[in-house]
Structures are given as C-alpha cells and as structure tokens.
Length: 593
Image (cartoon, rainbow, N blue to C red):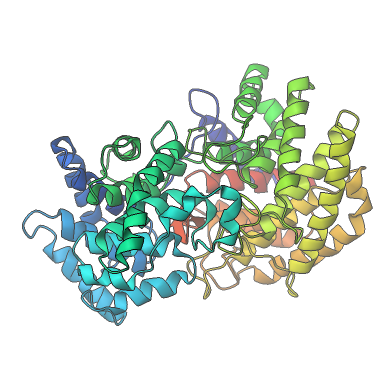
C-alpha cells in the first residue's frame, strides 16, 4: 500500500506540473498522417511560394512515418487503414518533386494490392463508400481529394455521391428532413465539397446546373458566416483543409473561408512538419484532470490557482446562440479556441468540475443552472444524450450513446444534490424528468453481459473496433459517483446498484491474465483502459485492482494509446489521457481503503 501511495503522489505532482502558464491543462494530440496529407495538399494548391517549405516538411514527415507494412494509420502508433493510406498516397503523389516519393508510393501500392485494391481501379470508390455507409461526411471528401490530386481520373467523380450544398441555404430547422447524409457539424464540407462536385461534374440538366450555379455565391457567403475567428472549422485540420482545397480548385479563393482557413493550417503545423487532427482538447483534459484529482485538488493547488481554474471554465461557457450550429446558450465545447462548439460530454464535464471547485458565488450557480438547462434541452426522445444536437437522425455522433448519457446523468444528479435550494423550480422539474428518461436509456442499452459501448472511443485491435471496457468503465464510474446522494439519486439507488453490479461483473471477466485490461479480454492492454477499469472496480475487488496496479507500476513509461475517435472513425491519442486516468485510479483505490 505504501508503494501505491507513493506512486500516486508522484503521478499527482506530474499531472499538476502539466498545466500551462495560464493554469489549465492543454494536452497534446498525436500528430496525424491524415491531417498532414490534407494540409499539404491544400497549401500546395494555394500556390503561395511562402508555403513551399511547409509542404516539403509535411511531405518529409509523411515519408518518415509510413508503417512497416507499407500503409498509414491515423497516428504513428495506429494500424494501417484504407482511408488514411489513400489520402497519404494522394498527398505524396501530388506534392512530390520529380520522383521523390517513388519508394513510398511503391510501398503503398503493395499494401493496397494486399487488400485487393489497385489504385487505378473503380473499386477504390466503392471501397471507401462501403467503409462509411450512408454517412458521406468523410467518404466524399476523401474521394474528392483523390480526384483532385489526379490519383483517380476525373471520370470517377460520376461515381461519387453529390453533396447538395444548395440545401444549406434553407433554415436549419429543415435539415433533419432533408437526408443530407452528413453529420450536423460538417456543413462546411457539405458546402465546400458540394460546390467542387457541382463545378467539376458536367452531367445533368442545363437548367438545374444554372440554378445551382446561381446559388454558389450565397452558399459561400453562408460558409464565411460559419467561419470562426481562428479560421478553423471546429478547430479541425482535416475539415478545414478539405473545404479550402475544394474551393481553391474551383477558383473560389476570394473569400474568408479560404484565406483564413489556409492561415489556420499554416499556424497549426508542428516543428516536426506534421499536423494534429485538432488544435487541442483543453476544456476536456482540464475537466478530466480536475475530476481525476477529486478533493485532493484542494491540497494540491493554491486558492488563487483554483480560482483561476474556476474562472477559466466560467469564461468559456457559451452565453449566446452559437453561430456555427445554432446551439442554445449554456453549453461548453472541447477547447478554448473559437472553432469549438458545445457538446454533451464537455458540458457535464464542466458542470462537474465547477461543482468540485464550487465557492458559492452566484455566477457559479447561474452557470451550472444554464449548463443543466442546455443538457435537458439536448436530450433525445429515447432518453439518451447525443453529442451536438437532437433530431438529425441516426448518423454517427448525432445519436444517443451510453457514455455521454451516464456523464449527463451524474452532472444533473450532483447539481440538484448541491444546489437544489438555489435552482429554479421549473428547471428542477425538467431535470427530474430528464433523469428518469436517462435511467431508462442506460438500463435498456446495457448489454446482457453488463457492458456499454462508447461512441467517441474505440479499440483498433478488437474485431469490431469497439471498446466495451472503456464504455463500461466510464458509465460504471459515473453511476458509482451517485452513491451517497440524498436527492433524486437516492430514489434510483436500487436500479443504479443493479446496473453497477452487472458492469463490475463484466469488467472482472475482461481482465487479462497479467492483471491489465485492453478493449476486451485478450486484447493488448493500455494504461488508459487498465486505469479506468481499476477506477470502476475500486472498493469492489481488491485482488483485481491490486493486479491492475501491479501492471501499471511495471510500465516503464506513461505512453498514450490511440483509443480516441474523432470526426468519423479517425483515431487519435492524447498524451494526458494515460496520466489523468492513472491519477484517478490511484486516488479512487486509496480512497476506497
């Protein structure tokens, strides 16, 4: 026990030291081959001679980071996949000088051949469309870049679904009825890539083409209106790059979207030549860090440092309708940069962090009330919580999911527990109804083996790329944190305990022989998954937890694993995840003794 306590003190100090000069956590997302390939193509197309070195260093990063099997994964530690390999093929083919990419292209040709794919075969289009199914958010931009870079012939455009950019000019309330085939936060791709296809495809009735052409300028004007101050849509390098390259190729360069988008890409390049998928996840890793430290944060930081953290979170709550997606005020996004939009994981995360840091000021109560109001307004009719907005159908990231629902449930229950005498009575009634529906959703979606599946996280080594260990551990932790509540949580205690017992049983069954956890039993372990499983089991099974701790303490280095999912099946790792989850595991285990 002494060794565990000592290790916790070391890890806690390390986590505290990771704060930036402003006093909050920024983290560092893995460099992405996919982002790098998209960025260098967009910059080369711009024709700016000042970008030549940026393109060359990005090109060199790609050549250095090809996997040993000849393919590319989303991160340098990721398994090779078709989408990223094809995008890297396009970028290297398009950006090489003479034959400087010849050997890398040859290696990719062999990898693709092993998958039964020839780069000049029409099967490429069908393969990409099959990967993403009815969701065109990512498949159509990927295929567009392949044609734009000359890897696929222009005739392939006729095989690629058309994106109806003109429909974005209708009121947003109509979108859910239009079957747009893109997730709600990808409207820039719908417009930018849609215009590219309109301009490049020559088939269709002349009258319809004329009408669509007349709508190009209004659509670009709307796109400019969606552009955040940073120039990066959602702070996402791939999304911003796809839009900039498609509009540039169409000759539509005299607009803020292209000009500021290219500047955004220039500013995001790293010293090694590559690009991450997004600027950062600063709000997310900050709230995770606060919750990982728990009450120990009061002994780890000064009152001034805690006040600065509290004010930082209060300042980043959206207090007006969001210009990008029309979201109501009250939520939080994932980063402090302007491209972020409110979502149903960062909002409960911020609420719970503010409750942890609560000082009793009226501004805190108002912020938490507004956050709860935003959450209850987002809840789907099935009782679950989607990521960004309700009513868009069943495309990825716009449907209900268990981990977000568990997170929202805990935030609502704890808010009522701590602030019920200060909260608006009408809001309290809304929260009560929301809690009841969320409980039903979690009960209905817990599998017979006790597991839940997450939406934003997965495991590349499982057969179906899902991560039931992550999802189950997260929801189990949220539910166990309701134990001891005297408000509405007490009313649901028996039902919560039943779900927790099943979840704990699942996690115990998934532990590997060496004491670790991966995405499932028998899957290579990660620090993140092992730490989360230990946190969920703290106080339940000392033997399983001790074996998990032994595995964690035998790890030579705290290394991140690509378990995060971003945008549409895009893997990433975040350097702070293993440290944050390790701190939480050690703290929860020691607290349970």
